[in-house]
Amino acid sequence: MWNAFLDALRAQLANQVVAGAVALGLVGVLAAALRKVPGAIWSQAKRAFVVTATLDSRNDLFPAFVAWMDEQRFGRRSRWFSVVQAPPELAGDDADADDVPALQYSPAPGFHLFWFRGHLMWLHRDIAMNLQVVETIRLGALFAGRRVMEELMEGVVRHAGARRAHRLSLYTIDRWGEQWHLADSKPRRSLESVVLDEGVARRLHDDIHEFFSRRDWYAQLGIPWRRGYLLHGPPGTGKTSVAYALAGELRLKLCTLSLTNPKLNDHTLADLLQRTPPRSLILIEDVDAFFRERDKQDARIEVSFSGLLNALDGVAAQEGRIVVLTTNHRERLDPALIRPGRIDVEVELGNASTTQLQGLLLRFHPGAGERTARLAADYPSGALSPAQVQQILIAAGSFEEAEAELRRVWGEKVG
Image (cartoon, rainbow, N blue to C red):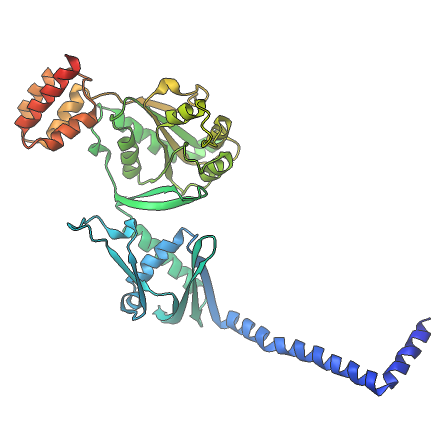
């Protein structure tokens, strides 16, 4: 059979037309293969002589790189640039009297050349619009090793760290409810900026500091390296302010979320709590509102109670995480949520005590020592919230005005 096949093939090839067609086909295949050779050689040559790095706007490093690029000589002197309103973390704290927004000048999308540590480098900036806007930057360096590109990126990270050394990074959930987004950057608050009863601030500070220092101890005992706090009390008692001050004092990132956000469900909540930035304090405010809306069977609330518990301390829950829950109504919380292991420390923040009132008075009127003591002695402890006291002190033009208004307001409260 095989010999018959070979004889038939020889007979066909003996035909000049068939032989010519076969030859042309072989030439075409060879030409197509050879056409790819220059591209393959060029591709390998590029890898040998050019190092390339790519990052896009879905990467947390992207804003830091843009900020670094804008401050480099080539970024400041580029004659082809775009103008946008500066994001909060770059705009600074100086408020313009006319609310004129801070502007950011940045090399425009396209191709740009620059020098870095003696190496010719270039970047290509591109913007793609589909379901979401994604901006991509491709960096290239000629006759450089990979380490040069790594050093550039490490410099970008150090530059971002220096900019934020004295600022609190505030993260919120993006518009799709799928990932954390750096929403703002604020000056850090110290715990001393929050007037609390004696020992409360120090207790929280020391507990969190000890938590971060005992990672190996948790591992040795097989205990999940997580910590939960519950701050409860009436409105205006400083629960949110304490969380902000703790994050600022301990140089933590602050991630805030609301369980009543209609974009959240069990899956996205668990995913978000697994992917918080390192050394973060997660603030879940007014958690009682979740129970209230859940009891109403609000169709917009897609997070279930079991989903919340699993996100907080399930098998996949993130290690090294601090969660702070705040509530105005502790009694509305399900006992399963605040049991030991989920909530390790509870702190009640009540209305202003005599000590707190005097502390707030001295902050606004440091020279009125004796008068603040006399006023505090007459104050019925717990009559006003710290927020009420602060509002009165801000509005008053003098200590005398503040004293008169405080006495009037607390008189109405207790009378």
